[in-house]
Image 1 (tube, rainbow, N blue to C red):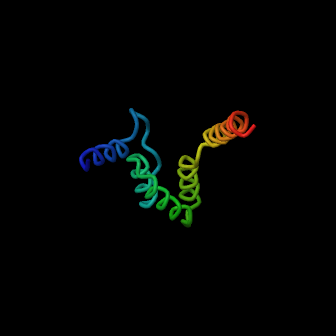
Image 2: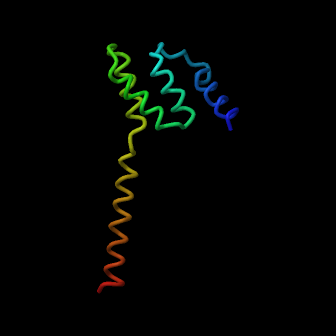
Image 3: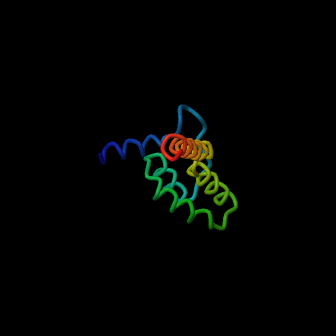
Length: 97
């Protein structure tokens, strides 16, 4: 498992298919990006929140972008709410009526 994680981290550092390398990031933000690419969202969120309090405006903006990428999907939340409401209606119609 450790080798697979290192491989994912290595690919994240290498960049995507011939695109220009991104602007240099703070060490905390670089670590957050690596953890995000590896699927360790808890550590990525912790590091991104720390980087969002940095002095550099560019670092704060990049940290906010990363935090936005980890935010819950509003569509998924609405779908869950709709399913719960539908389940409530079905229970009411067939069991409580």
